[in-house]
Image (cartoon, rainbow, N blue to C red):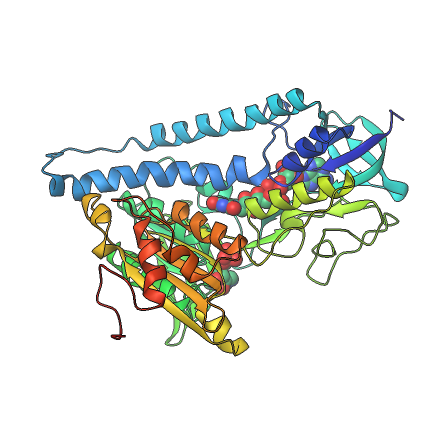
Length: 479
Ligand code: FAD
Ligand code: AMP
């Protein structure tokens, strides 16, 4: 057995690699175990997010947005761009280069911070020992004072749509489509389904999204969901709600017949590619020996408390493999919290202030409570809303769809939620996050000076609108 580590992290996704770097920065002797290898057997760091999730999807979204904007809107600026073409293979290669640079960078960060990388599949044994089975089959066992489980998640597969090479794809397969399909089917109108659907709709695919639930984006504020539904319809995303996929059939190895049932009965569509985006499940296969002392909950997530402690003292779990939203930034913040706790510091994650973003165009972003949540909880609140159509900068940018909505407590004025649909909502939402993290009132935002002309002024105006003081729109009622 090798020397004892202060911390062994299993998994090098945005939860695990961030936890390992933080732990090493705090002076702890740290190792990170990662099983993912590339075709040459070299370790692949960065997990789902960097390799087949957040980053590659945003690279494709950015390329296709630029293409579509040029085609559809260059003329609005007086630019003649008659023959705009997309080289899909080049677009995919650009995405691959970004992924390679970023994931390679993590190896560099490990070296710079003194994190030991242990290539192999990690398994937690009893007594906080970690067994590592390398890609070449060799097995080593390492002891640790503390273990952080950060094994992440994998796509949910559904029996009616078994993955089929080149035709029925999960998120990893979807990111490697290198020719625009004429007809694309997507199962699931969640974040991944909408983002992937948008990529290909912008390149001209006829996209049909089949969603089993009757409501659209049920977890989002319904103002956001309604606005998004309207805009997606204009973008030719055919989103069918209440449509449960019941079967698929590959025809001549070339196309896929998708059977689904909705309120009118049994239906089918035929598509050239089908993306299955019905959610993700925690990955814990082979992670825990029977006597590791760590328990799973009824849904297969590793059981943890608010500070990510498992049932086994000294063993923590973070990220997609534990309760809470499956988001990279949530995983990373948990990683930092746990490293700090291990180093003897006080730390916590504010789960009330987790930003959510869907990177369609316009983007959808929110933080805090929705109106429906507040209504259900019987909380009295006031809202202020400002449309980008009234923003000078948004007009100059030709990006006037959407709005910002601020929700504040009726009595205390404390901001309870910020919801938006807009061109760069993913960046603007940080203002709501910071405001909420600092327990701001709507008045605090009202009294803050925003640079002119910026789309951020919409956040200011929405805060002003909470008290009917917006300047650049007519307020709901006169004071
Ligand atoms: P992962 O990133 O899944 O990493 C876990 C790592 O652990 C993997 O590298 C795995 O190989 C390794 N591992 C597992 N078991 C073992 C073992 N036994 N031994 C050794 N190694 C092991 N989130 C956002 O916040 N923003 C986005 O824009 C976004 N876009 C997404 C787009 C797509 C298409 C997908 C699929 C996901 C997206 N997500 C996004 C979600 C985000 O990727 C995850 O929330 C995030 O990766 C979770 O981080 P993690 O560290 O918990 O797990
Ligand atoms: P998310 O978890 O945000 O990625 O969303 C996944 C979506 O897929 C959810 O809205 C589910 O309702 C939807 N879904 C799951 N199974 C099916 C199915 N068989 N047919 C259609 N939609 C489904």
